[in-house]
Image (cartoon, rainbow, N blue to C red; front, side):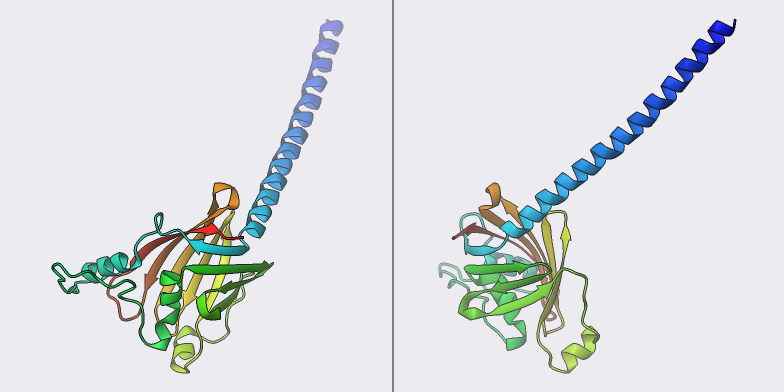
Length: 212
């Protein structure tokens, strides 16, 4: 009887040791996977830097998307019958709406990244600088616009995707999501743009190919 009891005690201790080892292995494996995932995300973030050129075939037509937003908001679009709409028809407007034009129409984009700061440079050296460390302006949005300030943007990471929110001077907003494709050689940007003067949001996808 004592022999059976000793055997049960032995197997019980062995099971406990095995259980502890299993927990240690599981924690180690989870940590390794998390470290590997974080390393891959960090590499993707660095790959986002570079010179990018618009791929018109894979991108939405910005004018088409603007017209859809106008119609969705109850507005009317002029009929052209057989006349062709000029290219970049809806581009242009007051200075406080320039940011919308840059992200919607410019064919080139240079991205520079030194954690946590991004610099986006568009055509004619138009720049926007923002950070991904959670910093915010101390002034409120309303007072910022009324005092005639500049556009501002801020970003954060969602795994390997860069999510940027902007507050242009007109009082509207943009929400932009940047993701890499094709091994880092293609940049996909999905945007929601809502100028203050619009009743509906513009949904726009732009795709860039790496130029360097």
